[in-house]
Image (tube, rainbow, N blue to C red; front, side, top):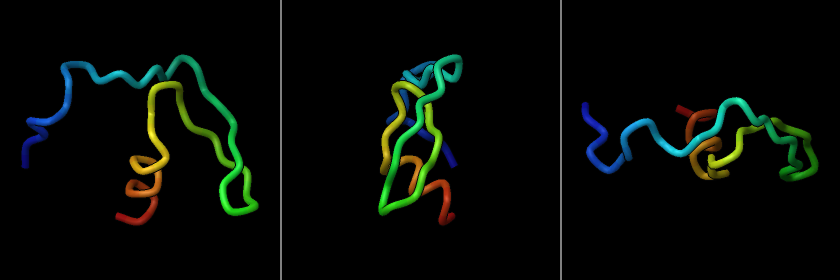
Length: 44
């Protein structure tokens, strides 16, 4: 499988973690990531 829609290197800054709340629970993500990306990763 390829990810032709992804930019070279991506735009996610793993050097800058961010805390957020979703549906009453606390999570941590990274600057430049999306909630949709995070949600997909958790379920697949």
